[in-house]
Length: 226
Image (tube, rainbow, N blue to C red; front, side, top):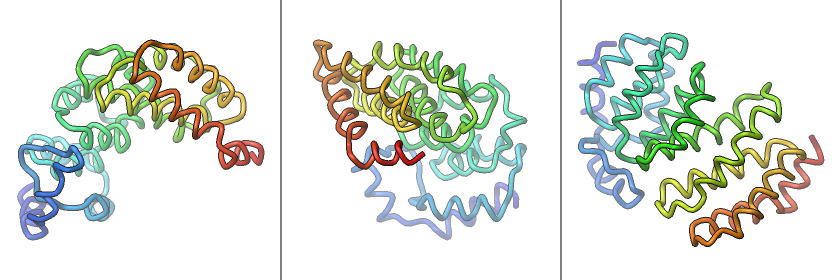
């Protein structure tokens, strides 16, 4: 398919009611067709991977062209310069998370960007760092525990940030790492205990919410059964 054909399909699928409701969930692109993610995933599956087409789609600044771009790009052809440029375009959480989950975590730069972006001042960049930590904990099945342990000090360092996208990203990373196995679960709970002692409402929320899940019977039983 060409970019023009894809945009024509988007126009035929446009859902004004869905588009109007996105703002309630913090999805605030300048332009959107209101197409649901499962529809975009189905389109991506039908189209297959295509780096050149993905780059052409990204140049069209709409929610759907950019999310579809992240779905069809080829991770082995993505450069560090490209993902930095893409991250600079993040203005709302959905695009940040989609790019991290669909593309960035599959590139060789994922681990380094998780660390580097966690120190950035921009809300969406910082969130992207922690989303990558969370996603790597789920998707990189072969990574040793020692690969995740350096993330704990970064989680502690940023847990005080009151911005909604950041504190939820920090919390997500802590919970996902802590659900990976029993050893990391213990380390994640210890990290959460330390965070709970910070003089910050955001930090206390991060810690309490993480501990609630990491200590839960369901999580503990699942870890024992592995």
